[in-house]
Image (cartoon, rainbow, N blue to C red; front, side, top):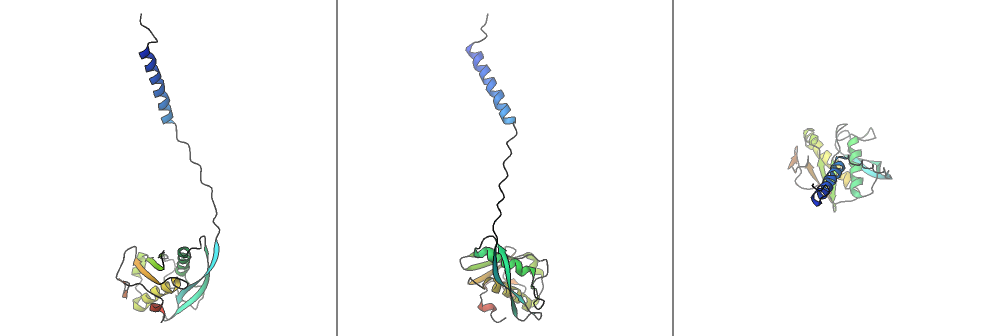
Length: 180
């Protein structure tokens, strides 16, 4: 008569039990992750100068606006200022530079140099040379009001030579837009 509890049978039974336990462990649904705790960031009110144009599109007009930022770093303040710029002026004596509902440009900061990524819709505004210059100058003066040396522009993430008739190869400085 053969032995029921031979060494081979015991090892095979142990391996079979381990395989069943491993199969059950693999088939279990994973534990649901815990949702992160919502932390409300404290918003700080900051005053910024935002530039628009007069109705004749000849001079720059400044408005002091209050923006809410969660971080008081220069890039966050600059982006908040451009969001207010795209929303348009509060005063009826000033004219918005972009149509209502147009997306605000994205702004990036490297050292003292601003980089502004204009949305693709800005290429289709067809403002003419004075309107295009006013668009770029209102952005430049808004960003360089408190800090920074110059502003470089790209269109839809790509460097371009011109926006309509205005040369965008070189960065804009305060002096480029001082005569407006």
